[in-house]
Length: 140
Image (cartoon, rainbow, N blue to C red; front, side, top):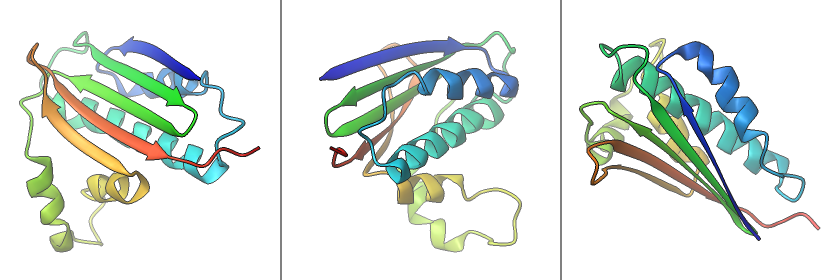
């Protein structure tokens, strides 16, 4: 089994509700609840970061595109934005310097702990793609 769903939103934090409702369309009864919640939390963090950081000074009409792929043993989520980009591996390597009393700045660390694959690359069409993959053992 393989299923892909797509969504395009605006650069608006209020669209997070649409994003999470869209993600719930995936049939997830065979996915362990902890794994499902990790993916949902990571998705919320990625979308929020796209709005707040990648698209900070862009018009609210600037699209954010999302893709979720469900297979028998993994969930893959891609979020595409038009921001200037950043060095994910550099940011992740500096995570030990995160101020634990700060109100923000720990999202990337959180995501990296919840998923099995975490990448951020420039696409051929000039967008950025933050990609996560979570592997799971299906519930029978």
